[in-house]
Length: 120
Image (cartoon, rainbow, N blue to C red):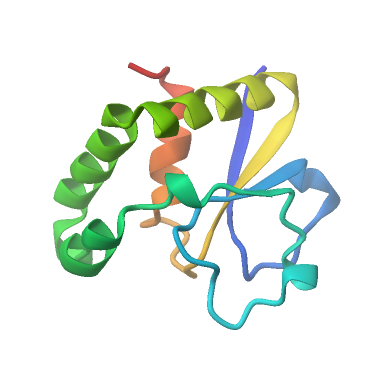
């Protein structure tokens, strides 16, 4: 059974998190590495700089999601990392960490949905 969770990297780690993967292009501001308890930092899976800087707009969330998904699928390296995460999730719980405090509108939820529905 595939178990993928998402969580803000600023939220206290827990035993139930399983393997913790940070998927941010840049290390989150003000976060000490010891506190984060990140097993692996996949900065390649974070939204591109241009997408983060110029495209992100809560009011246009659906458009942002579509562009981010397209980035993930089009890039062979990113696609391979997504496949690795999918395999990890089949073997145990994984938690995808994001660097914001918005539990609903964050790119970790987009990655989770993409992995859960199967990569195309």
